[in-house]
Amino acid sequence: MFLFLTVLQAIVAAMLVGVILMQKSEGGGLGVGGSPSGMMSARGAADLLTRTTSVLAVLFVALSITLAVLAAAEGKVESIDQSLQRDTAPISAPADDVPLVGDDPLAAAAAAAAEEAPATSTDGSIPLDQ
Picture (cartoon, rainbow, N blue to C red):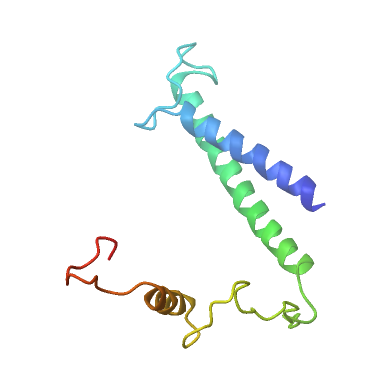
């Protein structure tokens, strides 16, 4: 039922767009010539398009409300799922032998690098890699 009404809604929407685009912006309708007293004269076409637009607009709104009510009735949840349990293992230390300094692996790596290489050379100059 919901799918049928959704397809019908799409068809009504396409027809509504087509009827609106056929009208003149001044409200003159198609402007197609014909017999002056016939139904498809310029005035008769304008009246027909105006009535068709009104009927399609009312049908579109009615279908929209019906689909909203059906969607709300079908999607009703009886209880809320609150089972957000995480089953992940805790984060372990890095695989190499770098100790953590205050839980900061970058500070530990910098401390290890500082212990390996002296900060200054024997002649008092600063190395280029710093």
